[in-house]
Length: 94
Image 1 (cartoon, one colour):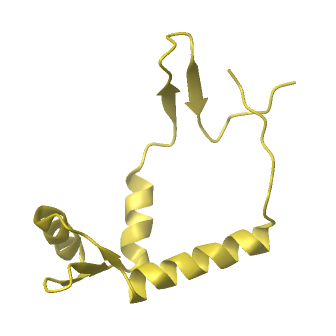
Image 2: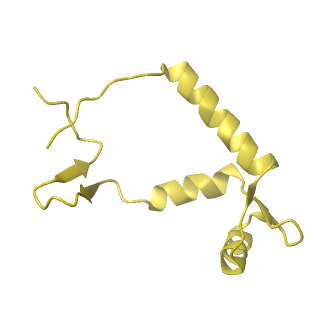
């Protein structure tokens, strides 16, 4: 099964959202309730506040994590015939 690809945002808008996201993660952070996860973030170099449970994640950690993610994967539906391959090589149907 192939899906159509369409662009909602232009490249400049995407870059703006990305920059804002990186700033929020680094300056405001996210709340992480699970202690072991906070420890993993801290071990990776994130700033962890144990009182507020806030974890501030620098962009270098996010870039590293993205590099670790698989380049492609398959989504399986409840219908055994439904399988959707997600990859950079994915093309729009004709």
